[in-house]
Amino acid sequence: MALHPEEEGLPAADGPEKLLEDYEIKIGKVRVFAVENIEAHNTIEDGKWIRLEFTKSLSPLLKETDLPQWISVTPTPEKLHFDLSESSIAMHGDFKLEQEYKVTVKQGLAAEEPFTLTESVTKDAAFTSIPPRLYFPALSTTQLSGGRRVFELQSVNLPSVSLRGRLLDKNTIIFALTGYKSGYPNKGSSNDNGREPYHGIPFELVPGKTIVEQTIDASGERDEVRTIPLSGMKCSRVGAPARFSFPRKVQSASRATKHELSARRRSCS
Image (cartoon, rainbow, N blue to C red; front, side):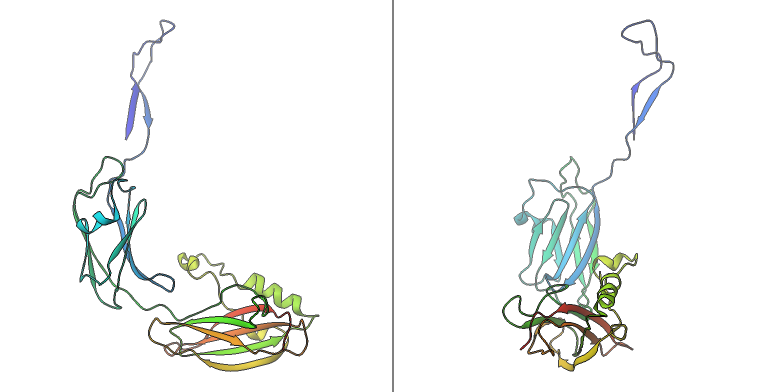
């Protein structure tokens, strides 16, 4: 789109001069109001939900209670409700895994600017299981900071977890911490890095004596988040730094993938 504010021959205000040619100003393209994306999500924090994104901000007159007349999902899950944002809408409810849902946004939905949806949009959406994962509440912590002598490990879709811990020597701890600092963040360029910002560090590369080695049952229902308190871990002396590695055992995988934690234990029982 372009404006033509000045045309050839336009006289100046303070003299006999005139514009010799048209002067054009390009201001860009006007985007239509449309559904940009409809995508199903399944996360530990929010469960199963569907996100609808639009190319423009939605009308400020639109309320969450108005949305069922503009947006529908078939089959309709129980406890269906909507969360309205500036240019997106989230649909929450008791969605089922691997169930094909059909989401429809009706013609006439209004944007903040004087635009409406020119035609109805329908798209299929389906949910898949949460990938097998291990989570800690912090990147690094101390065993006594909360007064409980416990590291809380969260597990989802894993049958078991192998726990290994090493006692770090004061002369080599700097190498372990340097490797952890430079190797743990996922520095790839993949679009998934925002969701998977870390990757494991090979346990064999960390110097030290292995002081903990055990297998922990992590089995549960599909997509069930299990919180496993790791307590009673002992070390040889007060203030000894330790490193713990948690290789994930995934039944469908050909090899284990490692999730790791580096921590300093301030004291031990």
